[in-house]
Amino acid sequence: MNPKSIAVSIVIPAYNEVENINKGVLDEVFTYTQKQPWNTQILLIDDGSNDETAKYLEAYCIGKRSWRLIRNTHGGKALAVKSGVLAAQGKFVLFTDFDQATPLSEVEKLLPFLRKGYAIAIGSREVQGSRRENEPLYRHLMGRIWNLVVQLLAIPGIRDTQCGFKLFKREIAHELFQALHVYADGEEREAYTGAFDVELLYIAQKRGYQIAEVPVHWKHMKTTRVSPLRDSVRMLSDLVRVRIADLQGKYDR
Image (tube, rainbow, N blue to C red; front, side, top):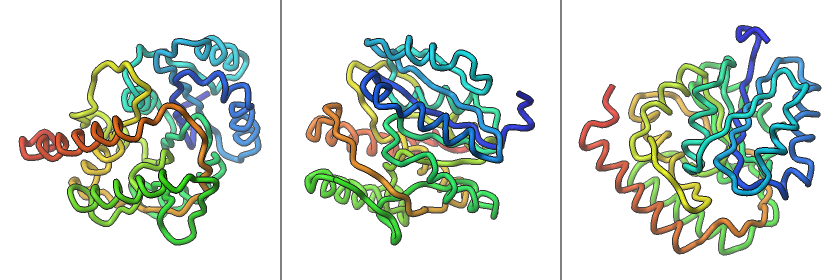
Protein backbone atom coordinates (compact mmCIF):
# COMPACT_ATOMS: atom_id res chain seq x y z
CA MET A 1 0.00 0.00 0.00
CA ASN A 2 1.28 3.44 -0.95
CA PRO A 3 1.97 5.38 2.30
CA LYS A 4 0.38 8.46 0.70
CA SER A 5 -2.94 6.59 0.51
CA ILE A 6 -3.04 5.69 4.23
CA ALA A 7 -5.41 7.93 6.15
CA VAL A 8 -5.09 6.38 9.64
CA SER A 9 -2.39 4.20 11.17
CA ILE A 10 -3.76 2.26 14.13
CA VAL A 11 -1.25 1.21 16.79
CA ILE A 12 -2.35 -1.62 19.09
CA PRO A 13 0.09 -2.70 21.84
CA ALA A 14 -0.21 -6.29 23.07
CA TYR A 15 1.09 -8.08 26.15
CA ASN A 16 -0.15 -11.59 27.00
CA GLU A 17 -3.39 -11.08 25.09
CA VAL A 18 -4.42 -14.65 24.26
CA GLU A 19 -7.67 -14.27 26.22
CA ASN A 20 -8.62 -11.11 24.32
CA ILE A 21 -7.61 -12.69 21.00
CA ASN A 22 -9.96 -15.57 21.78
CA LYS A 23 -12.74 -13.06 22.44
CA GLY A 24 -12.45 -11.88 18.85
CA VAL A 25 -11.17 -8.32 19.34
CA LEU A 26 -8.95 -8.54 16.26
CA ASP A 27 -11.92 -9.64 14.19
CA GLU A 28 -13.77 -6.55 15.42
CA VAL A 29 -10.90 -4.32 14.31
CA PHE A 30 -10.62 -6.05 10.95
CA THR A 31 -14.37 -5.90 10.26
CA TYR A 32 -14.59 -2.22 11.17
CA THR A 33 -11.61 -1.11 9.09
CA GLN A 34 -12.80 -3.09 6.06
CA LYS A 35 -16.04 -1.11 6.04
CA GLN A 36 -14.40 2.33 6.08
CA PRO A 37 -13.98 4.54 2.99
CA TRP A 38 -10.47 5.48 4.14
CA ASN A 39 -7.39 3.26 4.09
CA THR A 40 -5.84 2.06 7.33
CA GLN A 41 -2.54 0.60 8.46
CA ILE A 42 -2.75 -1.74 11.47
CA LEU A 43 0.39 -2.04 13.59
CA LEU A 44 0.28 -4.78 16.24
CA ILE A 45 3.09 -4.41 18.77
CA ASP A 46 3.95 -7.45 20.85
CA ASP A 47 5.56 -6.20 24.05
CA GLY A 48 7.60 -9.34 24.71
CA SER A 49 4.63 -11.50 25.67
CA ASN A 50 5.49 -14.71 27.51
CA ASP A 51 2.44 -16.60 26.25
CA GLU A 52 1.46 -17.40 22.65
CA THR A 53 0.30 -13.87 21.80
CA ALA A 54 3.04 -13.19 19.24
CA LYS A 55 2.36 -16.48 17.43
CA TYR A 56 -1.35 -15.70 17.15
CA LEU A 57 -0.72 -12.13 16.01
CA GLU A 58 1.73 -13.28 13.36
CA ALA A 59 -0.79 -15.78 12.05
CA TYR A 60 -3.55 -13.18 12.03
CA CYS A 61 -1.50 -10.81 9.88
CA ILE A 62 -1.01 -13.41 7.13
CA GLY A 63 -2.82 -12.33 3.97
CA LYS A 64 -3.71 -8.91 5.35
CA ARG A 65 -1.65 -6.43 3.35
CA SER A 66 -2.21 -3.48 5.67
CA TRP A 67 -1.48 -5.43 8.88
CA ARG A 68 1.99 -5.70 10.41
CA LEU A 69 3.41 -7.26 13.57
CA ILE A 70 6.31 -5.62 15.40
CA ARG A 71 8.02 -7.72 18.09
CA ASN A 72 9.63 -5.98 21.08
CA THR A 73 11.34 -7.21 24.20
CA HIS A 74 9.20 -6.42 27.24
CA GLY A 75 9.64 -2.72 27.87
CA GLY A 76 6.16 -1.62 28.91
CA LYS A 77 3.27 0.00 27.11
CA ALA A 78 5.04 3.29 26.42
CA LEU A 79 7.82 1.69 24.39
CA ALA A 80 5.39 -0.62 22.60
CA VAL A 81 3.23 2.30 21.50
CA LYS A 82 6.29 4.36 20.61
CA SER A 83 7.67 1.70 18.28
CA GLY A 84 4.31 1.51 16.52
CA VAL A 85 3.95 5.26 16.22
CA LEU A 86 7.41 5.66 14.72
CA ALA A 87 6.58 2.99 12.13
CA ALA A 88 3.25 4.62 11.24
CA GLN A 89 2.79 5.96 7.73
CA GLY A 90 -0.76 7.32 7.87
CA LYS A 91 -1.75 10.96 7.82
CA PHE A 92 -3.15 10.43 11.32
CA VAL A 93 -1.98 8.01 14.02
CA LEU A 94 -4.27 6.45 16.62
CA PHE A 95 -3.22 4.30 19.54
CA THR A 96 -5.85 2.14 21.16
CA ASP A 97 -5.91 -0.58 23.80
CA PHE A 98 -5.92 -4.22 22.72
CA ASP A 99 -9.03 -5.05 24.74
CA GLN A 100 -10.97 -2.38 22.83
CA ALA A 101 -12.37 -0.88 26.03
CA THR A 102 -12.96 2.12 23.79
CA PRO A 103 -14.27 0.64 20.52
CA LEU A 104 -12.30 1.53 17.41
CA SER A 105 -15.42 3.09 15.90
CA GLU A 106 -15.06 5.96 18.39
CA VAL A 107 -12.26 7.29 16.17
CA GLU A 108 -15.04 8.84 14.10
CA LYS A 109 -15.60 11.27 16.98
CA LEU A 110 -11.93 12.27 17.05
CA LEU A 111 -11.15 12.62 13.35
CA PRO A 112 -13.20 15.81 12.78
CA PHE A 113 -11.07 17.70 15.30
CA LEU A 114 -7.82 16.96 13.47
CA ARG A 115 -9.46 17.88 10.21
CA LYS A 116 -10.42 21.21 11.81
CA GLY A 117 -6.81 21.93 12.73
CA TYR A 118 -6.22 20.38 16.16
CA ALA A 119 -2.89 18.60 16.53
CA ILE A 120 -4.22 15.95 18.93
CA ALA A 121 -7.63 14.56 19.85
CA ILE A 122 -7.89 12.39 22.95
CA GLY A 123 -10.72 10.17 24.09
CA SER A 124 -12.08 11.20 27.47
CA ARG A 125 -14.26 9.46 30.05
CA GLU A 126 -14.70 12.61 32.10
CA VAL A 127 -16.09 15.32 29.82
CA GLN A 128 -19.78 15.83 29.21
CA GLY A 129 -21.22 13.32 26.77
CA SER A 130 -18.89 10.46 27.69
CA ARG A 131 -20.24 7.07 28.72
CA ARG A 132 -18.66 4.58 31.12
CA GLU A 133 -19.83 0.99 31.58
CA ASN A 134 -19.34 -1.47 34.44
CA GLU A 135 -16.61 0.47 36.21
CA PRO A 136 -16.04 -0.50 39.86
CA LEU A 137 -16.36 2.39 42.28
CA TYR A 138 -12.79 2.04 43.55
CA ARG A 139 -11.40 2.31 40.00
CA HIS A 140 -13.50 5.38 39.32
CA LEU A 141 -12.32 7.06 42.53
CA MET A 142 -8.69 6.19 41.75
CA GLY A 143 -9.07 7.76 38.33
CA ARG A 144 -10.66 10.92 39.70
CA ILE A 145 -7.91 11.40 42.29
CA TRP A 146 -5.18 10.77 39.70
CA ASN A 147 -6.70 13.24 37.26
CA LEU A 148 -6.90 15.88 39.98
CA VAL A 149 -3.22 15.36 40.85
CA VAL A 150 -2.23 15.57 37.18
CA GLN A 151 -4.16 18.81 36.69
CA LEU A 152 -2.58 20.35 39.78
CA LEU A 153 1.00 19.27 39.05
CA ALA A 154 1.32 18.95 35.30
CA ILE A 155 -1.49 19.43 32.80
CA PRO A 156 -4.19 21.93 33.72
CA GLY A 157 -7.38 21.77 31.70
CA ILE A 158 -7.30 18.11 30.67
CA ARG A 159 -9.69 16.00 32.71
CA ASP A 160 -8.70 12.50 31.58
CA THR A 161 -5.12 11.80 30.55
CA GLN A 162 -5.28 8.02 30.93
CA CYS A 163 -7.90 6.89 28.42
CA GLY A 164 -5.95 4.69 25.99
CA PHE A 165 -7.46 6.20 22.86
CA LYS A 166 -5.52 9.10 21.33
CA LEU A 167 -5.25 10.44 17.78
CA PHE A 168 -2.42 12.59 16.40
CA LYS A 169 -1.27 14.15 13.20
CA ARG A 170 1.56 11.81 12.21
CA GLU A 171 4.42 14.31 12.19
CA ILE A 172 3.40 15.58 15.63
CA ALA A 173 3.09 12.04 17.01
CA HIS A 174 6.60 11.27 15.78
CA GLU A 175 7.95 14.44 17.36
CA LEU A 176 6.29 13.91 20.74
CA PHE A 177 7.18 10.24 21.13
CA GLN A 178 10.79 10.96 20.24
CA ALA A 179 10.79 13.71 22.88
CA LEU A 180 9.82 11.35 25.72
CA HIS A 181 12.40 11.31 28.49
CA VAL A 182 10.99 9.46 31.51
CA TYR A 183 9.53 6.80 29.21
CA ALA A 184 12.25 6.90 26.56
CA ASP A 185 13.59 3.41 27.24
CA GLY A 186 13.86 0.72 29.90
CA GLU A 187 12.85 -2.83 30.71
CA GLU A 188 9.82 -4.08 32.63
CA ARG A 189 8.97 -7.06 34.77
CA GLU A 190 5.32 -6.20 35.25
CA ALA A 191 2.50 -5.35 32.81
CA TYR A 192 3.02 -1.69 33.66
CA THR A 193 1.11 1.01 31.80
CA GLY A 194 2.43 4.01 33.72
CA ALA A 195 1.96 7.71 33.16
CA PHE A 196 3.47 7.96 29.69
CA ASP A 197 0.25 9.62 28.48
CA VAL A 198 0.94 12.40 30.98
CA GLU A 199 4.50 12.92 29.74
CA LEU A 200 3.28 12.91 26.16
CA LEU A 201 0.51 15.47 26.76
CA TYR A 202 2.76 17.54 29.02
CA ILE A 203 5.25 17.97 26.16
CA ALA A 204 2.44 18.69 23.70
CA GLN A 205 0.95 21.37 25.93
CA LYS A 206 4.38 22.87 26.61
CA ARG A 207 4.98 23.15 22.86
CA GLY A 208 1.66 24.83 22.27
CA TYR A 209 -0.17 22.11 20.37
CA GLN A 210 -3.96 22.27 20.41
CA ILE A 211 -5.50 19.26 22.18
CA ALA A 212 -9.19 18.38 21.85
CA GLU A 213 -10.67 16.31 24.69
CA VAL A 214 -13.51 14.32 23.16
CA PRO A 215 -16.19 12.29 25.00
CA VAL A 216 -16.12 8.58 24.16
CA HIS A 217 -17.87 5.36 25.09
CA TRP A 218 -15.67 3.26 27.38
CA LYS A 219 -16.24 -0.15 28.97
CA HIS A 220 -14.39 -1.38 32.04
CA MET A 221 -12.56 -4.61 31.29
CA LYS A 222 -11.65 -6.87 34.20
CA THR A 223 -7.92 -7.37 34.56
CA THR A 224 -5.44 -8.66 37.10
CA ARG A 225 -2.68 -6.44 35.69
CA VAL A 226 -3.49 -3.31 37.67
CA SER A 227 -2.04 -3.18 41.16
CA PRO A 228 -3.72 -0.14 42.77
CA LEU A 229 -1.03 0.49 45.40
CA ARG A 230 2.07 -0.41 43.38
CA ASP A 231 0.98 1.35 40.20
CA SER A 232 -0.29 4.46 41.97
CA VAL A 233 2.99 4.99 43.83
CA ARG A 234 5.08 4.38 40.73
CA MET A 235 2.93 6.66 38.53
CA LEU A 236 3.17 9.46 41.07
CA SER A 237 6.93 9.02 41.11
CA ASP A 238 6.97 9.19 37.31
CA LEU A 239 4.89 12.37 37.39
CA VAL A 240 7.47 14.00 39.64
CA ARG A 241 10.21 12.82 37.27
CA VAL A 242 8.41 14.51 34.37
CA ARG A 243 8.41 17.83 36.22
CA ILE A 244 12.09 17.44 37.11
CA ALA A 245 12.92 16.60 33.48
CA ASP A 246 11.20 19.80 32.40
CA LEU A 247 13.18 21.86 34.92
CA GLN A 248 16.34 20.30 33.47
CA GLY A 249 15.33 21.42 29.98
CA LYS A 250 14.78 17.92 28.64
CA TYR A 251 11.68 18.96 26.71
CA ASP A 252 13.10 22.09 25.14
CA ARG A 253 13.23 21.96 21.37
